[in-house]
Image (cartoon, rainbow, N blue to C red; front, side, top):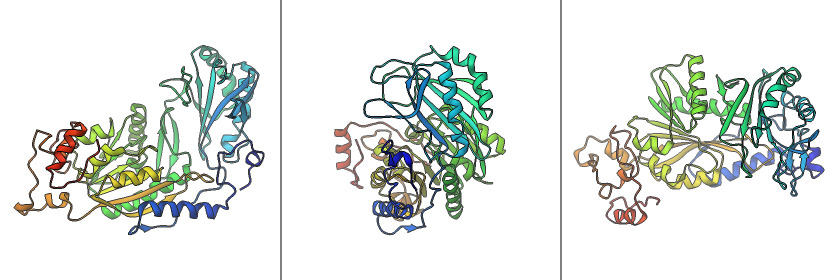
Length: 440
């Protein structure tokens, strides 16, 4: 694909754009295979449209009052307009010029990063295709422009009739972060409804969703097929967000529990569940590690879809002893995925597939089905042979290595989640028959 912005040197975000697309896919596949090693059944990568695939535009507002730019900043903090980026679909791109006109007419002062002054930092636009409904979010430094924006909003809505939700996010700090904690909905709401696969998901303003709707739908379809083959009766979905995996994996005579830190995202997931009329699906607000450490839900399959930083050593160790027969891991960072898998020695990847959410970059989504290895302590604990009976749970974490981290979900008995000091963990390991180190 050719991009005038890239060729002019105005934007270098798509670092792989000079490669033919089939070579981009081949490189991503090779990187994924190298990370997982041998013994994995691979399916062909799921490709994306080469342009017009992004459902969200995160635009830095720069320039001066009445002359704003929408795009990114150069190395000196000056605005570079990217509204002609070919990655945006027509339904999204059509909104940019009316939006720019509105901002210019309003006289709002763009935030000047080098000068640390101004009000409007970002505009975030999300489209729900094929309907074309839009969600607009204005990221402001303060409330100074909020009343004026609210007053002039009818003019914007007249220019953009497909807008179904408008909100203001307040981000007062001079930091390289996209948004702040406080969100104020000033029109419509509470969420943008977006059709993905077999579900209509509700996206509240601050919730996460994949930027490539078509490939996200393919990801959920693949997950459904893999999960049906292993037939779990109970699924625990960690980092469930607005419920993409949980809602697609729901089935008769199956319980699904989704856990997500964002209360706003959980509210969206609950509304989607109600609209779909699904029984046996429940959503909880909570931290993944804390929930898994104290839960007695007897899940035989756990879904994890963490951010780029991955699961981390503690949660990986907790999953390793949780007892689920399978783990379905959806990763957007193969490097952190490899680290997490190294911390789960009782599980081995069985099948995997690359989903190219991010063409022209080195990034991709990787779906991996992990299976608990036979002969692990989990398998032995389920044996009826008395000599293979599970170890009795001890309330003293210094005498119960596994109890120091997690909950044995398949026993239904909460263990202690006490975080031991490094020295205490080391001394416990010295007397452990497993001799498997836990992270500090």
